[in-house]
Image (cartoon, rainbow, N blue to C red; front, side, top):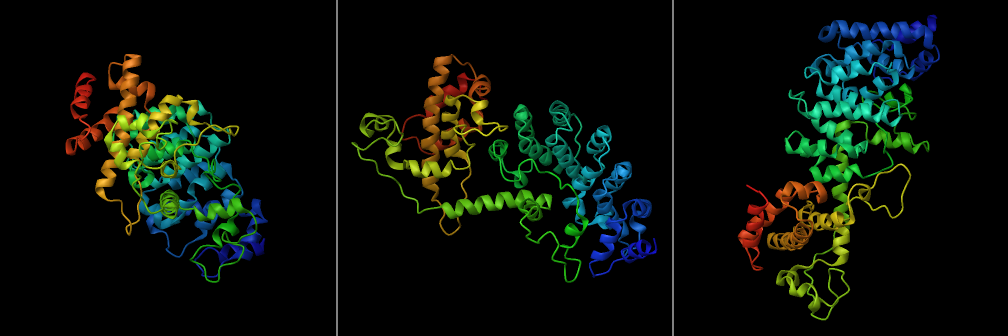
Length: 456
């Protein structure tokens, strides 16, 4: 008992030496250590900003209690999470954005109503509530939280009349996508239409839909479990001569090592965007405008000669067709097909017809943001020509469907055929391009279609 008390005293106040031996001793004496650790956390909650700056026992405490899976203490940890953001940041630092969700997940006592209530509380830190959403995501992956209950809660937030914050809506959008809740695609789009999603965090709606159908090595991992306090804390920069057992130690456990790279929630989102851009940069080849001969195979893939196919449709095509290889490159992030299914995954074909997907790919090639290196930008006239070419092809397909199915308005078309982009969005862009240059003589036709189908 004396050794345990001495170990606790050694971690009560900050020391640059990493206390590996003390943490190991405490970990080996769970029942005796829990009261001390609980008292330390309660002390932090009570004293808040008045807590001695050198006091650290509460910080070790929340990790150790999570390691011990002390579910009886969950309500108190939720009280800690509900403290004002500045206070919480002072008390637990980067844990607020890195590990709070994992700590709550490992101590969760089944009181989902408490978690919901706190998430809906606008006064609670957005970062803390984002971590609670992660906890709910992990509970859903574990099948502890039912799909219907999770979806009903998220719908309540999306359609709620009162705002519950700012950043939190971006987290909700990401949760919908990472849990592959395709039933909530209308709610996801609603969040974007209402301007509640920060595009710098998660991207545009088309990026989110790509994420909905994306499955990576960390898919389904929202929280760490079990918690290994020594492994997690030994990698912290606050300690001198960090121990090699820290999270950056490569022991062959790739799953835990991957988690280290993405501990910070915001960094995780931004890293995914950044490295996605870098992959595209590496894939870039010098662009060329393809000149297609009259007797060459048509680039549209019909199998006909060009003179018997797209040459008759638009002279613009002859000036700016991208090769199939170029198209394939820019469709690399498009949701994968179900040619080789993996059990438990949802595919775009499960929700949309092949005709919808074919049309959508034309729009994707036109409108999906292309990240070009600053040293080799795409000339503006090439960008406009390319977009117009794909949008005109999509518009002709749109006309065929409208005529065949006797569709009366954009809304009806969207409900049946739209995937990444709504009619009003892409046709508006086509109109602007045609107003700049209308070599195909399509401007009048597009305007008439808009007027007839109700676009204001």
